[in-house]
Image 1 (cartoon, rainbow, N blue to C red):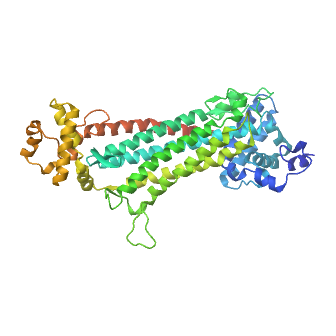
Image 2: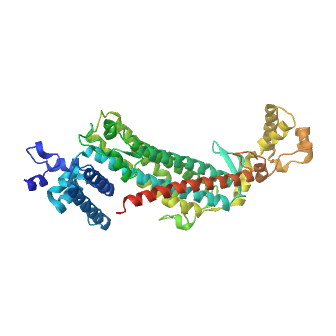
Image 3: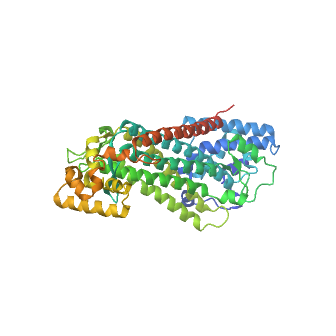
Length: 482
């Protein structure tokens, strides 16, 4: 009888026919949920220990199961553990291997547990671990941006609105704008982590279990911050997947915005930066070409990450309580998004650090197209001229200069005085760096403010790095056999 049971599906007792091979192939998730095999084994170890401690199963049986599961985990680490389509999913595959090692005793492991709470918990466990790595990658990227910010601290460039030169800013201030975006991404990742950090085991199929399970014991062993409050929600909830997908999508969007500028800036039309050859590619037909392919791919990969988020929203929108097979579609999209974001965050920091900024080009561009016009209007406003009137005066001056083919720097003292008497005594700065120095307030582009912001962000990153280090240590502890 044991052999017959071992050859059947975990759910096969009420069925009189074996599954059609096409059903097996369509129904199987082993191709992707193998990614959760370590989490599945480790959660099963905690479950078995709790069953033994609570005397739900014999203590000796629990120890036998635990020892065998650690052995299977060793096989996973050695690369010798294999799943097949017949296993259906990673959970069944682990149990099949457990049965091969210890026989019928393996069947006691599933006491008080359903694949519904098992898979929900494994996926939360896996997602937590991945979010730690995403956070680490974001820290590396912000550090790369801060590194180049410090290297080119005095470089000025034009800031843009509507893709038109607007006002001079420090290059480092521009880089810090992206740092702020990625710091918000770090916050989102940690929030997603916190909402994922909930133990689902003990919810069973949907209604909880009839055994005296110690859910807090399992949560403590697996370093989950808390246990779920509602068994139906625990097995049917995939909000944590959506949280992670959303965090990945916003990261991808920010990467895409940065990439867009890197592509422009490295072009011949701009010539603001040069990306190192080791992070560039060429053309198979045009010998002169040097392409910013990393940035272009970073921009392009955002589409698939967005698609995964939308796909998961659509998958969930029509599902009634509690678990439905539709939810098997939760994994591939998140796995793909996590893999994509981690790949981007692996290559972008060194690529950013490799950039050479051509300060002469950016400085010249920073004062073209009358970017200092606002400074001229501010001179008048500070002298008591209503700003709207000052705006009109300087706007007229800009129009006159354009028609005469002149810039502010070409105007004589008499020409300045003719515009308005205030300009006989005071002038706006005629260089971009001088313009930035005027914006000496919190959040502004003045050099002292930007340098202080860099120091502040490094302090924030120190705290974020401590969080990553702590969470990684927790994970190492979970997978270390005491």
